[in-house]
Image (cartoon, rainbow, N blue to C red; front, side, top):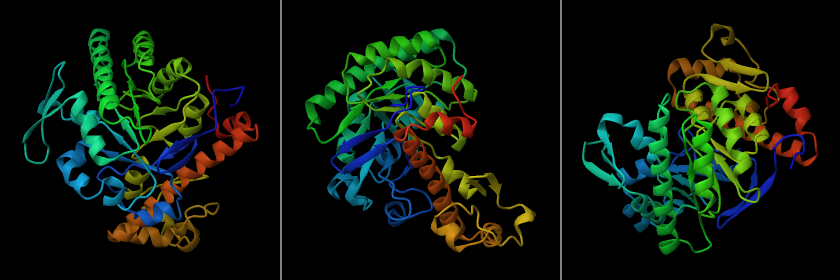
Length: 364
């Protein structure tokens, strides 16, 4: 652990391999990371853990189908660790298509309008069928801004759901081969975040997540809520901040004691022509790259940068070639994972404060 900040380096032990932290987890929403193959994730990227989405897999192809086919690892030919979210964020983003009660969330599928009910127990059952290594409890995620009263009601419902979910997990799925994380909520109110954390600590879970961020709030507020929450969480257990962040934000979250992060930005931005490099962002569609023979990032060792020019990638993007998405996503994910490896190494050799300063992202 870095004494000057909250940064720490550790190892998560799962039944599908060890994971060195801090770690960024590529998002494989529908049992696939968009644009690339598991072969790339295992080889060039050497990702140790990826995410799957409970909501989407529940609706299609169905968790029982996945169970019959040997679980999510076999279904998607992924031999390493998988974290699945509860689907709560996707359900709450449906807005007019869902109704929340203390029992759970009644919602209509975005695919065909069929009604479904997610409860704290049922979302655990779905994740057990998927066979994920780390499962998330059902939580209520509010959009920003929310009133203090709305956030208080939502937070207390999240705590009640977490108690029910963890109890169900311990009755039916706790076998030493997987983990279940409660999620700290409370919108952007420090008192609610603290109250939620205190109550969730009573569950003595294997790890804890911080949710309800990246929902429209200013970036500074995301960091503030993280900084308020992490000191309350057990030092010996992993801390996961959900749905963050930009490349330059990764060391900021690590400096505040975060071990795990995920975000769709590397793959989404890649498909939209935005590439991340050690020198900043590149918008590959710009005319300045038409005749540019240089790689996207001369310091990057990914397959894309070792073999193709900016001019070629721009051509693929403008031509709408599918291979562009593959090459661009491969590069962006490599950039994110390389940043996390740099951060971990800086922590281990006692140079993280210098790394943080060089990145221009020191804590307030």
